[in-house]
Amino acid sequence: MYNIRIRHKNKILGIGIALIIIPLLGFPLAWRGFFNVILGLWLCYIAVSMRRTAKSGGKNSERPVKPEVSENSVTNGDVQPM
Image 1 (cartoon, rainbow, N blue to C red):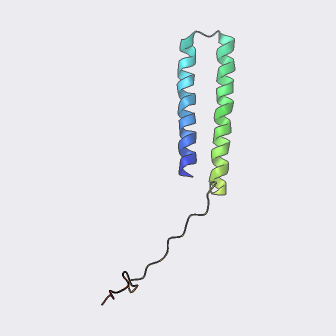
Image 2 (cartoon, rainbow, N blue to C red):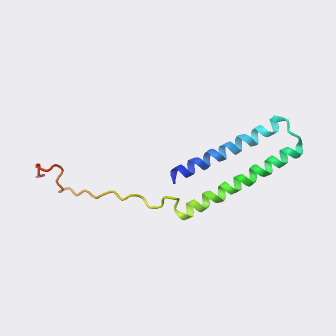
Image 3 (cartoon, one colour):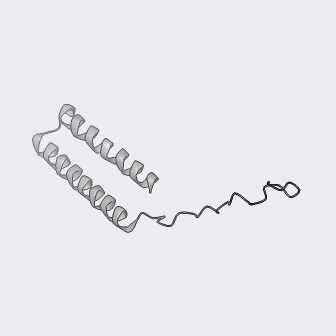
C-alpha cells in the first residue's frame, strides 16, 4: 500500500508541475483550457483510485504474520536459558 501512495503522489506532483508550465509554453487559450480539463479529470481519477484502495485496504491487505517468540524459547540447540 505504501508503494501505491508514493506512485500516486508522484502523479499528482507531475500534474501540478504541468499545470504550472502549460501557461508558459505559449499554447493558445483553447488548448490551455483543454489541457487543464484533461489534467483535472486525471487528478479526479487518481483521487477516486486512492479512495478505493484505501477502503479496500490496498492490494496487499494481508500482512505477513511474524512468529511469536516467547522468553523461554530455546535460541541455540545446546544452550538452555536459565
